[in-house]
Image 1 (cartoon, rainbow, N blue to C red):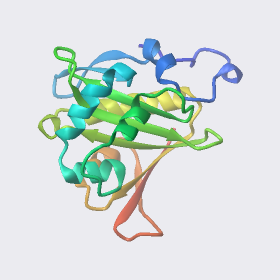
Image 2 (image 1 turned 135 degrees about the vertical axis):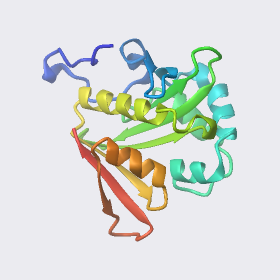
Image 3 (image 1 turned 120 degrees about the vertical axis):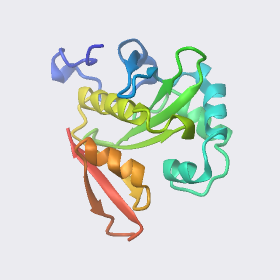
Length: 191
């Protein structure tokens, strides 16, 4: 896989995210650190049902960490936003089982208005944790963000989310307390 737009003149880069445009150059089979093969691809409208099944199988605490709210079920509006390509500042990548098309993990990037900083959120199915899927998916999202001109990636995390914080530290993020909420931390990485 090549880094989309990385070889073109930086002034020609589109300062936006696009699921549809990223599908060709940012979809690839990846072998995780645990040896599992997954397809990482931008979310498409045809992924909507698989995404709904994925989130139905995600436990409540992981739903909280992904959306930072007490939702019990991912509603139609949120699902539609994940597969929609009309918001130039967000993109959702999926890690999919290439054998059956089931979603194993989801990662969202949301850029600020100036396209300097993007926030991310990752969620992985319980039975697929510790397989390196979150690592592969976040690495993919970081490379995409860098290729699109993003300079810093951040995430607001619960200080109790040990697995996520360990992953971020391993990937070179710095973790600092959130000034507005002692129960939260901010993970940051300069690209």
